[in-house]
Image 1 (cartoon, rainbow, N blue to C red):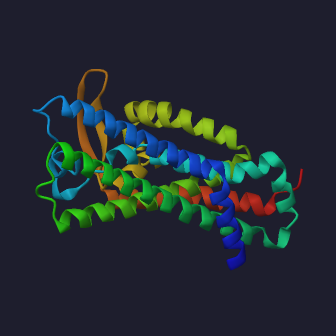
Image 2 (image 1 turned 180 degrees about the vertical axis):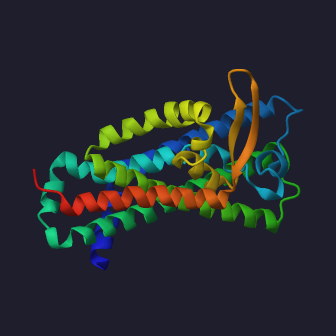
Image 3 (image 1 turned 45 degrees about the vertical axis):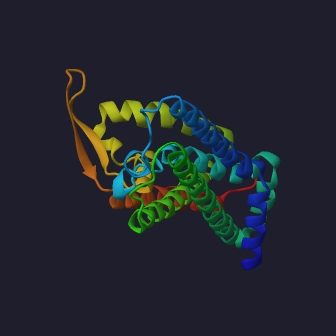
Length: 273
């Protein structure tokens, strides 16, 4: 099993998607910081405060805001393409001939995926924090930064990695179920932008509080899950707290377990086409 884990981990890191997607996000972070630096440098009255403006005070929930919104997409794409590539190349059929050890193979691939994506997400989070701190130090202030703040940021970084790792497993399971990585990824993007973030959020707010992306973002950032209450079309709407970030983590884990268990049951019984 250890050799299989090593082999699958090596395979994960050798894939272009695993490297290029995070590098693309890192490049966007750098571009954003450069633009912010140029804007702030030409506006003396707009000096950023690392604690108040970027970290949201000692709570530090705001420091990773730019990354928690895109983590589900990165994790899903990497997870879906990781297993979907085998279906496209025909390697999946060869793996299916290894019937006595299908589940062992699936577990090894899933573990290597979750750990690998979690490490990537944490690395991106640390990189973003370093960029924000450098921006504040060079154009504003980092007064008030304490060990407590860094501890809170470290906890958020860890939760960010865990949320990304779990969501990659979700993408892995969904792709394995429908046996089509392109369909799974395109469907997820449509679901993300149109269904969960718009249609369900507006028309079924109670349901939207328990959907995967909303809870992944909440768990990673440490913010409560909020929902709309009232008549949206008459403008009589209040925002209320549905549940906290720890409950959001449980909800996310439940979605992942559902997708992975269903995919495993299908995979171990799948016939060779």
